[in-house]
Image 1 (tube, rainbow, N blue to C red):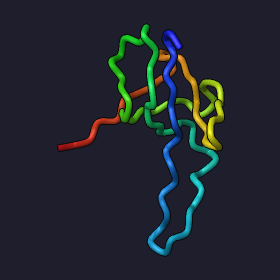
Image 2: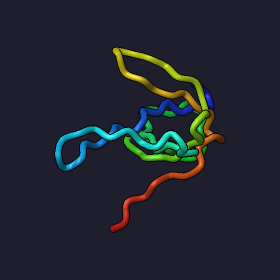
Image 3: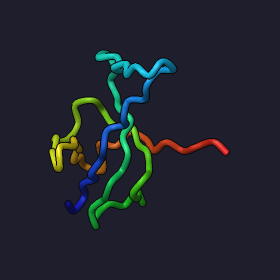
Amino acid sequence: MFDRVLLQPKTTEPSDSGVYLPTSSSDKSLQMTVISSGPDCKTGLGPGDRVVVNKYTGAEVFAKDEKFFLVKEIDILAKIEEAT
């Protein structure tokens, strides 16, 4: 993986009535969760960190019927920090 980061797309949350609503197709960026990062990554990202990437960045990878994205570390736009 070297300078690559394995990400899992943010799952869609159901509405109050239990209906899953798709996100807008016009969004230019996506929120994802870090699964793993390669040994050459210098950002200090670790499993569970939430990040923002461009919509068409990286390669789609499928494992156990789940979709993941493998992106270069440089393609990560931001790390999402929880307010305390």
